[in-house]
Image (cartoon, rainbow, N blue to C red; front, side, top):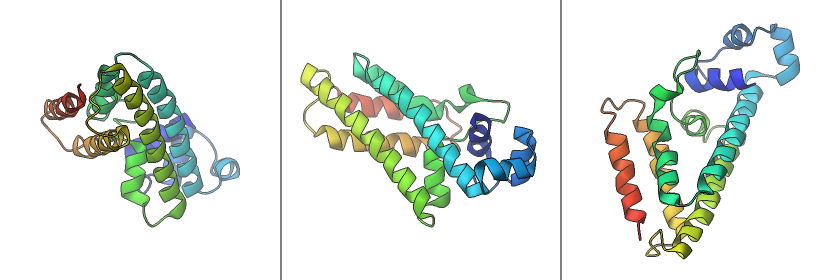
Length: 184
């Protein structure tokens, strides 16, 4: 399944054929259909797995003190695609964000999956920001929910823009500006 995540992540839903999956996974077409159903079902399962892994890393990162360096790491991650190269090629941005761009709003299940993932990101970051506000690390001039939503927009925007951005210093500079705005 992880290999399928990498394939869909590097190519996208539309550009990944069943034959690509058969070849990459070294399984027979019938076995693939038997185990995972159709390509859409397989793709959505891959996105769910991607999110589960991402959420575990997110929870661990947000549990650190001080919080702001961890947030910076989370936000700059999509811009460091050259560090994420696999044998399938460099993944392109965030797989959940890519799903939003490719399948939402035409696929209701994909829409719900993306909305749930974004909602969970916002919840987790909100709680971390609340703790950081209480400790005095993060400004309390804005509600933590609004700050978390802003960070979601930053990380998802960065995921898209960094795919075409040739200036590798632009993304970290933008993230640093967002982090600086959170400082108490």
